[in-house]
Amino acid sequence: MYGLGLLKGLSVTLNRFVESYTEDVRWLIKRYAKVEFRSSKDARGTFTIEYPEQQVIMAEEFRVNPFLVYDEGENGEKNIRCTSCGICAKACPPQCIWIVRSNDPATGRPVPQPAEFYIDTDICMNCGMCAEYCPFDAIKMDHDFEVASYTRSLKNKEQLMKPATYYKSIRPLNFAREEAARAEKAAAKAAKA
Image (cartoon, rainbow, N blue to C red; front, side, top):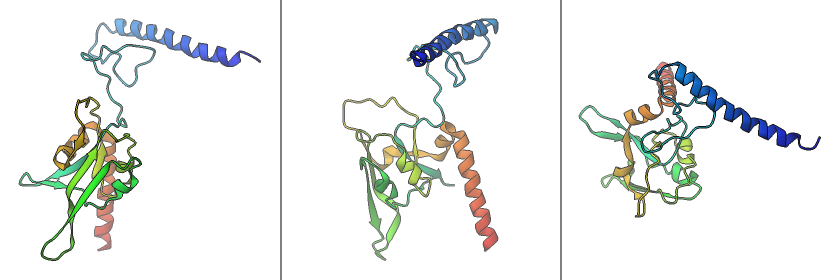
């Protein structure tokens, strides 16, 4: 039957329109309870956020720019997880990641930390392939989307590094899942030895 798809589309629009007003009525009934209104992930209907004053709560899987994760040592040193293997640079579709490896002058062997690490965030398409393929969980995707500037955004290793506690704060479920997998792997290694 002709026009059935059009009617289905209009019914979705009408449903969203009606849901937005039923949400308003529910909110008024709660008498201004301390509940995030219109900025939670469970909000329904159509709504407008007055951006600088209100911000939408980001979904945990929201991704913008990559950053390097480091673990904080006992003496405050930054133990970067990156081993400069180069898998992230190979997996990057626009090739916006550059890694410079360093060698130990005494032995000539590679040092498992990058000497230099650059990401050109102007070229980065925020696909998350670098974070997906990193075997050491050293590179993750950030939630910070307010990064507009008038200059080129070529970020070096120091600008990209953020602690594991920051990653835990923006993605608690993913962090818990990864830590459980890491503990399970360590227990399996200890049982084998």
